[in-house]
Image (cartoon, rainbow, N blue to C red; front, top):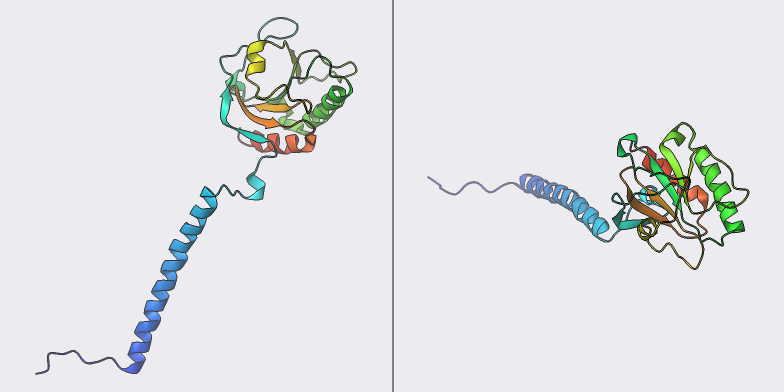
Length: 195
């Protein structure tokens, strides 16, 4: 009696090799995809559609403890339950034509939000420029040191930066002076979908 199993025929051996190669390919496909995704994730790459045009502040600046003062008197409350996003501008006192253009551009941006405009306010810190549109969404605030400190690099020598504050009172985005207002609209439109 022969205790050794019979040797596979050449067709059976080819089928076994093919099965092994298929198993190796499935393994490479599965783990190669995971490895590739990990490399992209940790290298900082993001798909184009998910990137914000503004500078994402990491960590976000916590301004919840700051109680902004309205220009006409009284406090401006963050009111997180209302899910209100804020576009914030803190220009220097001597800002004239650039601030007027920015005020008009932000008014157009606010109007383009359409039915979502109810969830966006524009906070103008300090005096509004002469001739600026008197929009419903604009809240004029006093330039208190606590509020200005919550806005990173607010005194930019290149011009007036724009910020986005989330409904809870966190400063999450900063736009460099001269940023296309369409980029602000695009980013805030994405944020509005989160509510």
